Structures are given as structure tokens and as C-alpha cells.
Image (cartoon, rainbow, N blue to C red; front, side):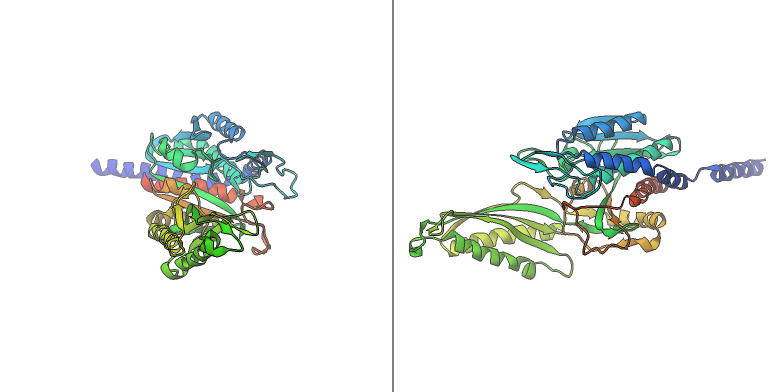
Length: 434
């Protein structure tokens, strides 16, 4: 009798397994069928962009849609952020999916009919506003993924937390925002997030491809402000001066030795760039002060600290050698940590990426010296941020407009792949952890 009962239980279990729906196949079909809706959302966001901490219209559209799906939605997170919670029918992990909301102060030049004509004031200047980094596409794809996963609520083993983050590109001077502020406000708690996934579209990566990298995938960023103070004099009598311009020129040259002599470039790239130098106002006056602005990029925490330490040492020592004084502020206004893809999580989810896009279309990429504040989430929980190709097939990556440019353009045909990627990462992670 016991043997019969065991056999019956086994048979019923196998029957239930056979009858359980293939959620990834369903998600794939729905991603394809919802393509036109994804495009419509993207084009609407693109035509009506908003800068960081100003994404009021954008956030309202996102929040209202998520509410219509029956989710628990919180608005005003870190100023304009939106967070929604989808609770599956069964216990399991909490998976966070993240998109950005904000656009850039760029005047659009693309000839598309939904091009932005928006202008606004940013840091006291009149600027154009454009989704020149693809955040409009990220939002549209995540909203579609939310609709699909919501329709599977009764089959989900876990919880999905949808994070729509403001101000990834930074805030106006003096304001707080972005992922760092969301973390401080507890976005990864209640319920506590176990893992976070995101994707970023790039205009120079071929459509249909997904690029990934374990470990440091995108660089940390620290901006810096350097002030060199000397002694002013007539330009015809430089011996009465302590020339901050000559001192600054020596500093700029000396800073270039940091990457070439202090960073092991076999392991990771690094960047030290001076982007602005200002001093003086007349041809025959040696000024009293010169100010420089620059950026530091590194792919590891150790390299980041090396850059900071060496910049301060070189600036102060060179100034002292010239009889000048220096002030060094690092970071001055911006700091993002390294965007670090948890190696174990990356290895775990690599088969999912390969099954979704095809193994030949999933590429191990080189580290990128651009930065992303997804890094603040990844400091707290294991995370994976992958790169979605948006370049039309047949285009030359050397000739396409880069992210952050006025001519930035992506192929909308990649949207279903992006939606499937978000859904499949969620479903497979839940399946392995249930």
C-alpha cells in the first residue's frame, strides 16, 4: 500500500511538472506581441525628455501604468523615483529590475519624427534636452517586462521589485539624487533585495547582441578641481611672479605619468583627464591663480585610490617646487564606484543570456571607462548589468553616433530581446532559488 501511494505521488508530481507552463516561452511570445506598445512608450518618452530630479511627467506615466497592473507602487523616491512590488504566489527570492528615468542636457539633431524639441534651464544655462543615452528605451522595455511578469503572478516563486531611478546622469549643482540617494532611502529593503539586474543599450554595439563582463565592467568616476595659487606680475617682468600657468602646465604633463607608470594596464585601464583650465584675462599679466577641472576613471577600488593619491602628490609637489601652493578636491562634485558585476552571479546567469540571444550573440566585452551609478546598488547586493546592442545591422561602429551625442540613434527592433532578457533573468534566477 505504501509503495502504491509513493508511486501515485510520484506520478502526480510528474504530471504536474508536465503540465506546468513554460514561462520563458510565454514571456518570449508576449515580448514579441507587445513590440508596438514598447515602441510607443519609448517614442513618447523620447519626445518628452526630462532632466534628473525633474522627471515628473515621466514618473507619473510609469507609476500609473504599474498601478494599473495591481502592484504596490511608491512614488517620490529620491525625489522622482518610482518603485513597484510584484509579489508572486509562491515564496522565493526578491529580484530587483532597474531602469533610469532621466535625459541629458543635449540638443537633439536626429531626423526622427519623435525627436525632442524640449528646452529648459540647467545650472543657469538654457539647454536642449534629449534622451541621448537610451534611458527612454530602458524604461519602455522594463515597463513591458513588468506587464509580462505581472501576468505570471500566480506562477512566480518570489517577488519582483521594479526600480525606476531618477538622475542617473547627475543632478543640478547642490542637489542630491540618483542610485546613491535611493539606497540611502532604503530602496533595497522592505522587502530586502537578493539580487539586481539591469541592462544598458549602446549605439555602437550590433543589434541582437548582448555584451557582458564579470567583475569591473564600467569605471569608477571622480571629478576633481585643482586650484594653483602663485604671485601675479607684469608679463614683461616674470621674475617678480610665481607663475601659476607654467606650474599648471607642468602639473598637466606630470599627471599623464600616473596611468603610464603607476597602473598595471595589463589588468585594467585607467584615465586621468584635465578637461578645463582657466586663468588670467590679459596677454601681459601673469595671473595669481589658475583653476583646472578633470576626471579620474578606474576599474578597481585599488586603482581608484592609486589615482587619487598620486594626483594629490603630483599636484602638491609640483606646485611646491615652483613656489606655488595648491588645493585639490577629489571628488569635487561627482563620485560613482566601479560598476561591479558579481562574478558568481554572472556565471550563473550566462546560460540564460545565451539561451535568450543565442550563444553566438553573447559577447564577453572589454571593460568600459564610462561610468554608471548602478554601482551603488551593486555595492549592497549582487548585481549584473549587461549591455544591449542597438546599432542597426550593417552599420559601421566607427561611424555611428555615440551615446551622449546629439545624433544618438538606436534600432528599435532590439526591444523584444531586451524585454526577454529582463524576464528570463528573473524567471531563471527564481527557478534556481525556489
